[in-house]
Amino acid sequence: MVTPQIQVTRCLHTAILVADVQRAAAFYDRLLGLPKVERPFNYGGVWYQLPQMQVHLIEDPTFQAKLANPEKLGRNPHIAFGVKDLNAVRSQLDGENYPYEMSASGRRALFLQDPDGNVIEVTEES
Figure 1 (tube, rainbow, N blue to C red):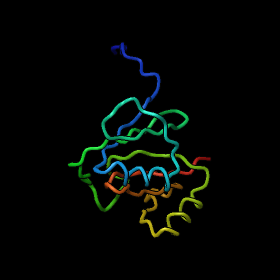
Figure 2 (figure 1 turned 135 degrees about the vertical axis):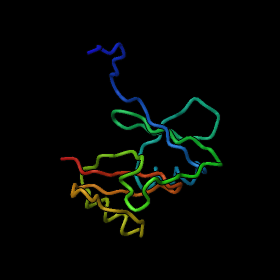
Figure 3 (figure 1 turned 45 degrees about the horizontal axis):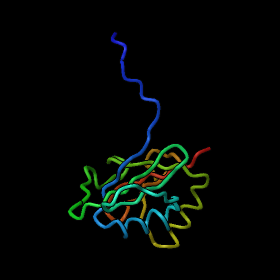
Figure 4 (figure 1 turned 90 degrees about the vertical axis):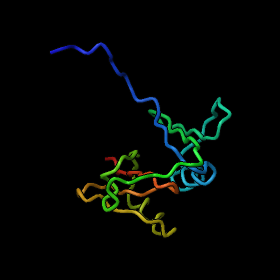
């Protein structure tokens, strides 16, 4: 067995393409409550800081999400966020008539899409 020379120490950020950064930021700011941080670049985008990593929204006006499996959101590329209370998330989403799917696995998790169709998993952490 070969010992890898690369030793990954942590995940620094994930980049999510969006067609309209203002529309997407409203979703990530208002609905998910992610805290914004300054970014040193002048192309369209917004960065958010989570305890262990950042989420970078990158604007591409031609972006269109393509779902490999539209029937099961969780079977598509996605980012997962941990929350303390999934019932509170469901109440907020229901109150705004925002569509989501509960995880088919039976876990305390749900899947939804941002305004550009990117899939987001929200999982209750114990």
